[in-house]
Image (cartoon, rainbow, N blue to C red):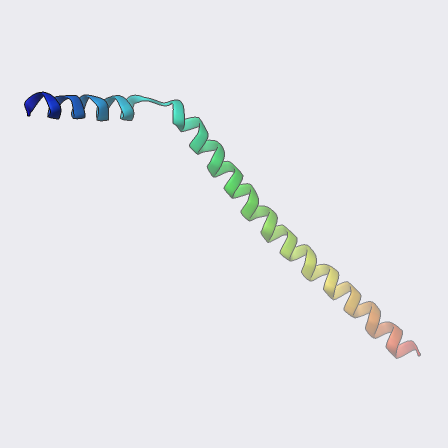
Length: 64
């Protein structure tokens, strides 16, 4: 039983020390942040475009 526990502890420590997956996690977090920023920016842009078209539509309706 003792050797199984020591093997498990050794494997766990080796996984904690392994940094191969760290880069992948960092890239995933960066992509997630960029996606959130893009969605927020697109929402602001859509609001500005809607406001512009509403203003144009109102001006055309008042001119007629």
